[in-house]
Image 1 (cartoon, rainbow, N blue to C red):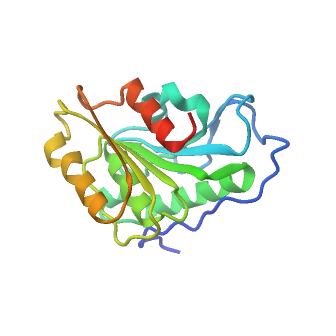
Image 2 (image 1 turned 135 degrees about the vertical axis):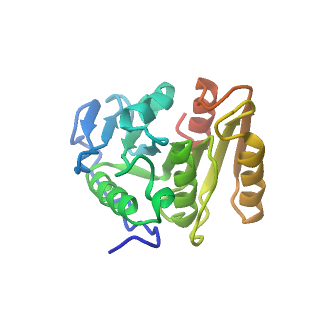
Length: 223
């Protein structure tokens, strides 16, 4: 399967809540090809079924940087941190395909092993990762109940499938992806296309303030 249509086949499974396959902490995601990604397992006190946040890094980033963006809320969910094959995600480098395929394979492994709550299954991202998350979320609403886009630049869906709930945040002083030509244009288009959600501006730059991360967690219903 080429994944050029950006459709993800992974779905949550019926998994026992009795035992976790891995202890709390960071573990390799198992993507291979030199860009392995990470899986962060929350503290044992977090009851199953678990919220899942698939967090995508920005251009030139990696799993560790993506995790730091949402560090204040990482204990509230199982956090999957895939990495792009290139410096950024495939749609910005020629079209959907390679990164979608790797993400799908990693999601299938995680969802087969972990008791994940289908009603709190989010794709999230920062900067280029936010644009990619928003695009994939709009095309895979049967899988992702929520999409959390921190400072996105664009959305490039090839089609709509389901209706993921969208959270967008953006700094009013963002010099890298200016808010006027990014989120202030994106959110009205999302709403016009039937995507319900929440939009949050904050006085700051290209970042994810703790208050924004916590608002996104509340939006997911995992706070």
